[in-house]
Image (cartoon, rainbow, N blue to C red):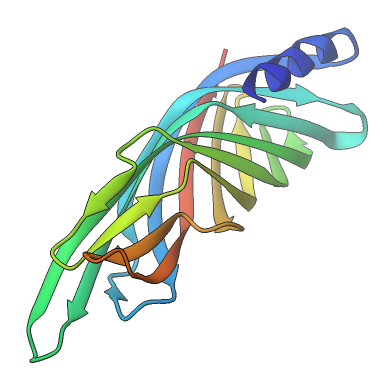
Length: 197
C-alpha cells in the first residue's frame, strides 16, 4: 500500500506540481475504551517523517506522509479492595496519512487550507504491553481519519492542527488468565510543523 501511494504520487507529477518536504509534531492522545480504567487526558507523544503535497486545479490538492508516530496513555485503575495502580502505555506506529486539501492564498506569501482524509497505521512497537493488571495486545494495523486546518508561510513553511479520529481499535485488553476485559481506541489532537524544499 505504501509503495502504491508513492507510485501514484510520482505519476501525478505529469499533470500537477509536486513538492517534497519533512514534517514533525506533537500528539496529545486520549483513549476511548470499554474498560474499568480511567485515563489521563492529552498525554504527549510525537511524530516525524517525509511528506509531499500535490497542487491540483481550483485550489485543491493532496498531501501524504510516511511518519514514525509514538503515542502514550497514562492508565489509572482502582482494583477491588481499594488498591490503585497507575502506568503508562506506549504505542509505536508507522503511519501513512493521505489528505484531500482545499486552500486559498491570502497573499503571495501566506495561504490557508482545510484538509480531511484517511490515515493508515502499522504497529512497529511491542505487540503486547503488560501493566500491573492487564495486557495490551496491539493490533497490527489501524485505520483513522484526519480533519484539520493549516497555513502556508513563504511557500515553504507549513503549520497545521488536526484531530485524528480512530475508526478501529488500537488494542485488546486482557487480564492474566487471557480473559478479554475490553478494548481501546487512541484518538489524538495533533499539531505539526513542516518544511517543503
